[in-house]
Image (tube, rainbow, N blue to C red; front, side):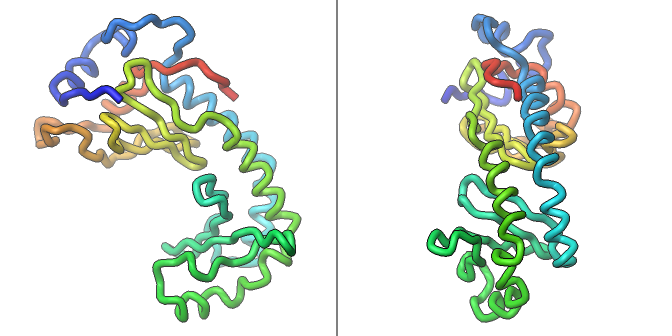
Amino acid sequence: MEQITYKEFRSFLDSDVDEAEYFGYSKENLISLKERLEGLRERFDICESRIESDREKIKRAYSDISDISYSDYRKTLTFDIGKSSYYLTKDKERNIYKINWYASSEPSILTSMKLIKYRNIGKKFSKEIGNIVENSVKYFNKENTIESVSSIFTLEDRYFSSKLNCNNCPFFFIDKKTLMPSKNTIISFDDELDNEKTLNVEDKQKLLTKIMVPRGFLN
């Protein structure tokens, strides 16, 4: 992973050339990160079209569940209630997803009381959960870490959002549906971001068009 100072990063961002031209790399088989993100969004939309009805069916049965998604990192299905997330892990013997009572930051007794109404969710919605997991796994069955041509930037693709890293540190998130960068910026430079070294959303949008990555499979 290559490193860059804020001064050089700003010079690159304010320039009229893309990453390959600025750092002297060949542009063969490269596309902008924005184009790659558009391809990932197409793949995301296909997956969503296959699982949306099953997700909504579960949410209708449990109206306090705000979202359901598969975590490739944990290999679990996550369902959100308010600001808390809970996990369903597969019971291989019974071939259903069961609540992981211990995967929570809350005290176990409090968690158990909250989750008792969901104890049969994996059994009641076995087919729906299986379809959500199956199609989500298909989405993640690809290269999920994409390195830019200069190795200064990497994209860690997640399901609902992607994380852009700079200098091997988190930089900002990008919404999968809108491709809009988050307003928050995480410091990625040795020289800290002060009032004169801030990045607004427009800067981030411009950066996505300048970073160059392998073409890969767009969908």
